[in-house]
Image (cartoon, rainbow, N blue to C red; front, side, top):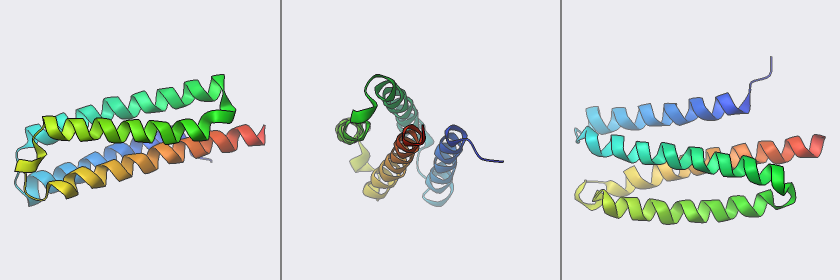
Length: 123
């Protein structure tokens, strides 16, 4: 049985959240409100990026690779703004809590886009 890439991406996203939340709450003993707001923002942004990738793949599949690079740049800018808004600098080791989820979700976004590109080449 072949796994669905949509399910795999969603499961890995929630697994990332659970691991990070557990570290945040039980190892570092930090306030959980900040991490919940952060992952709520990440969830909305991640679903928006997946939706945009699907739309771009339907409209202009030949530009999907370039559009993923642009979306990652947009994501970086939005993550920088939300980091300022949540005052991450007050949290000890804030770079760890900012960079790791960014790269994990960027990898998931790239994995999903590669799956769409490979699916188009097979057809």
